Structures are given as structure tokens and as C-alpha cells.
Length: 358
Ligand code: DAH
Image 1 (cartoon, protein in one colour):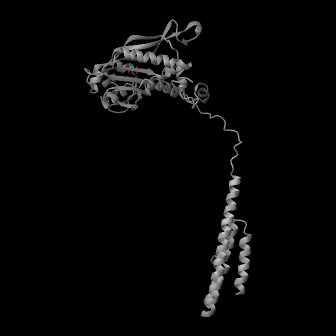
Image 2 (cartoon, protein in one colour):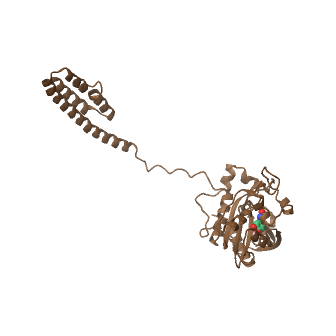
Image 3 (cartoon, protein in one colour):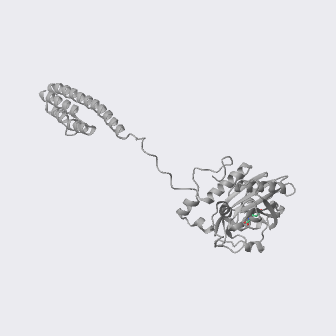
């Protein structure tokens, strides 16, 4: 009995003196663990006679229950204190200065595609996409460029390994094949633009083997050349931010449009300075035309009911003109100093309201 009473006093003192949950756990193990003092006491019961065992047993069980309660209470108190201490230590100092401005910025190609998208979406176009690896038929034949057509030579095509017949795959040489995919998949009216990567086997200051185009396609029952002109004049003026920018449509030839035109915008090259706007010179920026009825028929669209226009332009060329970037190759050199100079803030999203070239 004295044993249990002494133990009670010692344990209650040790529990109260434990300063941390770890110290408390050590006390618990010393009393209730396999070799703990209370456990040892329990083991003495086995050698007692039944009456004594009953008495002692009750006593030890009461001691055990009391110690358990004391440990639990102390544990709650210590955990609370430890949480308070941690919360105090982890306080966020809101007086710290903000992080320096992010170093990343938007590449001029992404920026110009975004600007074009904003302008055309405002006019009611949606964005479509297609694969970079194309079947010969989509890239050429369906666009009225049959095998042996001279236009195929002009494209400097990258062919993928495979059979040298109509089944061979190519890296698309323009975004025009997405016109075909779209017309096969959708009923008119169609009004899409297609930004994307294109590939030609050519490399110098004005050509890169991978470059970007934005294609446009409008198909409806009564779409005519007036719509084409209005749409593209509006686009050029919004893109270059010159309200009365002179825009000229010059007759041209593309197999997939009839009639076809190239669009020039006004510029000056006076005194060695190049400027877009009024002047005595012209600069070509895109190709366009009324979709050739043969192309419509190749996609299963009734050319006696539907007609439309298409256009295509090079993104790098427009970026160079708009932002005064002199060499095409620098777009793809991944030079961070160049990007810092010509890049755009990620938070200045182009918009028709705030301006497309913020
Ligand atoms: N696909 C032509 C090229 O890469 C550009 C083009 C011209 C696209 C006229 C068109 C178009 O849709 O109507 O040179």
C-alpha cells in the first residue's frame, strides 16, 4: 500500500513537472510502459493470495486510472501551450517588402498572336488549331495544289520519312490546311482564325525553318470581296494603331483562292527612317482571296450555296514591323537580354479597350 501511495506522489509530481509533451511521454512510459513502475506493481499481484490480490488490485487500478487522467490533462495543457508558442513563432511579418518584379516576360511572337486574336475575336472570329504534322493531301492537294503543281516547289517542304507518294507526311508549310480540317468538320457559317507554327526548309536573315502564321477563314452564303476588304482594312488599322492607315489590295495568285490578292500597307522610308502610315511607299503584309470553289468542293461544301474568303500572314514579319525588330533569327535565339528588351509584361494583356500594344 505504501508502495502505491509513494508512487502516486512521485508520479503526480513528475507529471506536473513535465515541461513538454516529450517529457510527459517519458513519464508515461516510466509508469505505464512494459517496464514501468505501475506495470511492475501489477505483476506483483500474481504472487498474492486472493483476498490480498483483490484489495491490492483495486488500489493499483485506482492509481493507474488517476495517473492516466493526470497525464491526459497535462498533455492537453502542454499541447495548447506548444501550439500557442508555434503560432507566435510562425507569425507572418506583413511589414516585409514585396518580392521584386518577376523577371519573366512575354515573347513578341506570343504578344503579336495575342494582339491579332483580340482584334479578330472582337469581329466575331473564334480560334481554331490543327496538327503541325500534316498529310500531303491537307497541306497541298485539298488546297488545289495537286502533285507536280509548281507551287509545291516554292514551299521548300520538310517531308517526314515514309513512302514517296501521296501518303507521305509533311511538316505543314502553312496554316492553310486547318481551313480544310475546319470545313470538313463544321457546317457553315464558319469564321475562324488559326495561329500556329509552320515549317519550311529555309534559313537566313528573313527566313527561319520554323515560323508562325495566322490564317483566317470565313464561309457563309453571301460573303463577298467587300467583306474581305472591310475585315482586313479594319484589322491592319487596329493592329498598327493608325486610324487612317492606307491599305491597298494588289491582284495576286494563290491556288486556293480565286480571285487572290496581296495586301500592302502605307509606309515611308524617307531619311533612312522606316515608318508605317502615310507615305510614298507600300509594304506587303498578307495574302488573301475568295476561297476557290474547288477547295469548298474538296471539303464537301456546296460551292453553289456557300462562298467565303481566306487570308494568311506571317507573325514574325508583323512583329518585326510593329516593334522594330531588325533580324528574324533573334526571335529563336533564346537570348534573355533580347527578351528583356523586346518582351512584354505578362500582366499587360492586349485588349481593344486599353490598346493592343501596351
Ligand atoms: N498560305 C499562304 C502562304 O503560306 C498564305 C495565304 C495566302 C493564305 C492567301 C490564305 C490566302 O488563306 O487566302 O504563303
